[in-house]
Image (cartoon, rainbow, N blue to C red):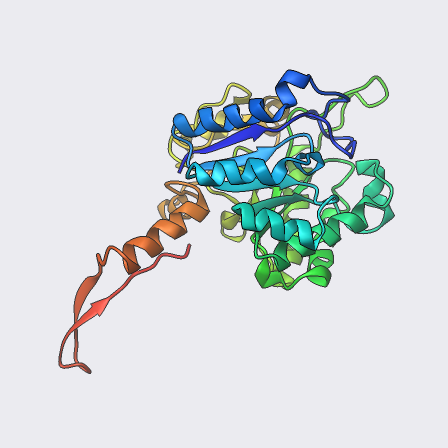
Length: 337
């Protein structure tokens, strides 16, 4: 499954301190409906089977339903990346009816403190309303959050906040983004977490999520790599390393990569963390079973869907001998992880 991100525009109704995508204004030629439709069409012509409409904040657009319908009618699965602050139940139903399958809802936490990060007074409450509306409308929701110095103490509180709003079983895994291009100012020249701090923060939010029946994963191409964790078995589910993902211009290998079994699919450490990572104990993957647990052929969602299709519709099942049935028994194997 090839996924293509299509920017609808660059303005946003929030001003998150970690964001490098937001712009104060848009070029009219870039943001007009016809231009966005052409970008969607070009992505589909290029082989994309899933279109992620992103921004800026796509829900600021009055033509969002039209854009979703255009992409869906062209044969693409449509995902919306949004902070959900501008979505109520009726609008969520309209988006779903137009063809919206999934929504990646960016959420920092609950209460006024996360609003210091988003710089949007009242935004947290509106995000929860929008997230709940999308779930109630039948859209598959993935909560997305960002791990930085400013948010690290908020992340362990996020699973409980999500569980108060919706049934945890209605949500996909909480996706954690670890940005490598944070804005820097003279007052805050270093705003990154170190390798050990990243691993500790991820472990805390994962432990809390498990307690509440939620799961956590890392966003694709988002660090730290598995060698940051001493006990790999506890965090293997965070990763979905794919063959071909070993080369990234903004990443660099360290000495521990030389004997790691996932070096063919892990790009190493982000450039800004590589020097610090090389100076601390790392734990490269040296177990073949663990290597398989850390890897997927495609995205997790598409891999599960492919297994279900193969088992249930293509009828490529196994035949086994069953004593109880006194003969051959047809058996379906569906891999869920």
